Image (tube, rainbow, N blue to C red):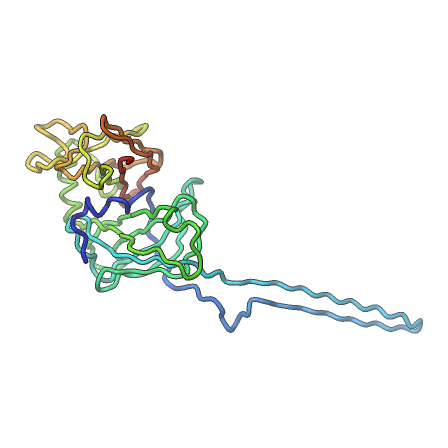
Length: 297
């Protein structure tokens, strides 16, 4: 069943970080008959001379390399604007963002394609990432352009303590269509953004109240950034009202906000009616990262 609306379905499903899309298709299989996982080497040398001295050297080395079977991740690719399943054959990478903390690219754990229904699955996932994981969805190389590379987070609490045979189900890999991207770019231009948003990359976020509804009047904060807040009136651009930038989230506008070329840092959300946990967010050139704040109960 397709999600009801992008903003309602986003609640509880999004988090952090960015990245490049690199695909490494293929499953890791355990128990390969070509490698039993145990190698034993024994060398015995006997030397006998006229003094009847016998020297015997026996070396035994045992190395055990066992494939570790991990947990599974299943879910659905979903068009953020329409709330419908993603097209078949989009490339989806599963990434570990931990190396970003050291200025390195995210680690590619696995890759797959969306199915006809938009569904996807990863098997034997093994990770110790405390930052969570990233679902990075994009057009495959050489395919007709249809979506903008989009990254959705999986919280570490979703897989904490899981092992062989366990599953993380119902994950959403959101996608931003080129049509939706075009509308955002037009509204950003109307708001005075003179750079190329698609080339710069951005964080696209939402704020929800404690029951999962768009939260009104919330201000997103960061060290050095400009936050653009969407309203429900596209006639003068989504991010402006009578030529002036909107200053807080609008529930009518889905409580959507956007930060272009966002550097990796902690972001806050404040309002006069709720509290929210800080989020670690950031974007990379040429891709979008989805983020969200949910009010504490």
